[in-house]
Structures are given as C-alpha cells and as structure tokens.
Length: 509
Image 1 (tube, rainbow, N blue to C red):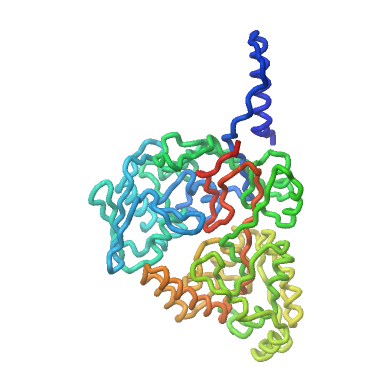
Image 2 (cartoon, rainbow, N blue to C red; image 1 turned 90 degrees about the horizontal axis):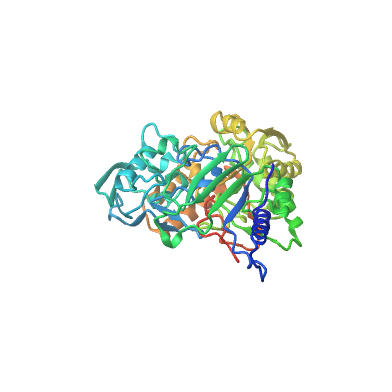
C-alpha cells in the first residue's frame, strides 16, 4: 500500500514552505516554530466491518468504527461501563416500570441537516422493533408496546412488561439513533449526530472520518480533524505498521505473542486492559454424552485454565468459572466450583458410564485463540481418556451455519463479546441447547427490577447455576491489548463495550 505517514508529509510540506519563502526573498532569521500537535490519526483494526450501520448487522467491527464517532444513542455507555445521558438529557421511569419518559436535547441535527427530535427517535425505535426489523438485538425492544411523542422534546415508551435492562440496552451500538431520510443508506453512507462525519470507505483498506464542525455538544467536540481506520488482518503486518509509524495506534492488537516485540520502542507504549470477550467452549447439551451434567463437569475439571491461557494467549487473560467477567456488576469468582482435578474428573466420567472415555469433535473457528485453546484442551482431555478431534471451521459463515443455525456440532469454542450476555443461556433457541427453568426464571427476575443492587444479587445466583451446570466450559476473558504512540491520549484502555470512542482522543504537543 502506498502510504505516507502524516509526520513525513508534514516534514515534506514544511520543506516546501521554507523553500518557497526563501525563493521569494523573505528573510528567515530563525528556524520554523515547533510543530503544533497533530490532528490526524491512523488507527488499525484486524477486521474490516461488513457495513457501517450497527442496527442491521451483528459484527462488532461495525460499532468499532461508527458507534460514538458517527452515531449516538439516547444514552451512552462510558469507559467505566456506566450509562450516561446523550441525545436524551434525562428520563423518568414510572413506579410500575412500564412507562419511560425521555426529555431530549434540542438543536441537534444529523450530519445532513435533518433535525433530531422525538419524531426521529420514534422512527429509529420503530425501525428497530418492527416486524421487518433485522436489528441484531431486536429482543432489546420487544417489550416496547407503543411510543408517544407529545412534543418535539418528549419521547414516551409504554412497555408491555418491566424491562430493568432497557436503559442499559439503549446505550448499545444496536440502539443508535438513525434519521428517517438517510437510514436506508447508513450501511454504506452512515449519517448520525456524532462528533465525526463519514468521509469515505475504500473497501479492503480503510474508512475515513472527518471532524463534525457543527457537533451539538461543544464540550465534547472532536479534537482530531481526520481519523483513518486501516484494516490489517496479519499480526506481523500490524506490528510492522506500528513500528514504522504507518499506524499511530492499534487499540486491539491481535497477537499477544508479539506484544514483547514492542519492548524498547521509545515511540510506542503497550496497554493490557479489560474486555467483555469471554472465551468459552460451548457444548451441545441436547446431544450425548453432553446431555449428562457429570460429563460436562468432568471435562471442566480436566482443564487447567491458566495453562490454556498460557498456551492460547501468551499468559494474558483472566480465568473465569461462569459466563461473566470481573468487569461486570455482580461478578462472583466461580473458578473454584469445579477446579482442575484429573482424578475427580475420571471418577465423574466412570460414574456417568464412560470409564474408558469417549471421542468427540470440536468445531474450532479459525481465529487464533480458538485452535490454540483447543490444542491445549485436547492434551488435557487425553489425560482423562477422552479423545477430542479438532475440526477447523471457517468463521463466520460456516460456523454460524453449523453451530448457530443447524446445531450440527458436539463442542465449539468462541469468544462471546456482548457485555452482560449471561442471558444467552435462557434464549430459545440458542446453540448450547441448554434448558434450565430455574435459570430462565432468574433472567426474567433481572428484568422485573431496575434496581442495580437487586439485579446484581440475581446475577450472582445465575453465575452459581452456570458454574455448577457447565453448559459450556468457562475458560478465560481475553484482555484488550493496545499499542499506540506515547503522545496519543484519550484512547480507552478498557473495553466495557466493543468500541473505538475517539471524541476524547488528542495528541500531546
């Protein structure tokens, strides 16, 4: 790729300017002043988004480009994971939890000049919840029975049942506000209310955003004039682009084994933060022998989680014992429920009728953490007489078809990226084929209250059930591995929601 770094461009332009000044006979008695802070950013991503509208497709890369940069929501989620007002400046919830009244900001416009008001908000929510909706989180809006707009500043949601997570869900990328006139084309030409405007998309290479000079929130206006998202899949190429200065930042560096290669780089710093990426080996709970809890427990006890982390992700990760991360409210450490114990695992298998073990296949998506984890698990299972064959599976298309749609699998392994998605074990259908009425009741109970303390208590009970039942083998939380220029400030070190929020990013002078 013919790429010239901003720094080299600036020096080239500076030399041209100096030459022109001298040739014009101007007296230069001093060197040019110190360079002002940069206002452009070249940011790397491993995966190119399939489109740019997070309300019509699930891949997280979509939101990592456009959420909070181009698009905004009624509320947002900050870098600590907390909900904050955004296009809605305030809201009230009725005592019965069935009516949500939002007061909207005034004077907000979409990038094409269309007004954001209650009518536009109603349009966006109706589009997300409608019969023809393809929103990847359509379930978020299922309890909205009707929407009223008493005036341009007021939006009223009437619910069919209490939905304690609604405000949190409204902060997600799938819940962003889109405009009636432009929504249809947001996949390729996104138009939002955010601090950056879409400029161009060179497929296979880059997306460019430019500063929105008319942004409604003057206190949070972008400090960068231009951001270029560069898509580089190969980790070695990612590292080379960072070291050469071709890239300024790679907030989600894809190769933990290469992190040490940046040691001694004076221009770059490395960061190890938290994410919501829960690596789990999901089992088909409707299929023998995984329909027997004792078998699932035996497999869990055959696994030394830290050894998996060492082998799969260079020791960078946090062991988990349930489908929950230490970042999340209500977290309870469940790694001690079924700890690594080969002899107990063998005894459980014998008790379940498999004294000589059994053979099965794991469908492993071709993303670095999956086959590496599978290979370590394969050796551990052999210790208890279980043979696991590894079948590489193209992701996402083949994996989605085989696992999510057809349920044609024994075991698989994948990193679940959605925050607080413990409720997937109550979804019907979902690929685990897990059925537990007690767990389902807890997920219903979470929505019956908007009180965080009460919700956290329920979440702890839910974690206890999953740790004991093991519908999936709970392995580790992947870290957020960041590499960027030392002078670059404001990038999120942790990731409570998959994103690259750039409104607060700037260069030190």
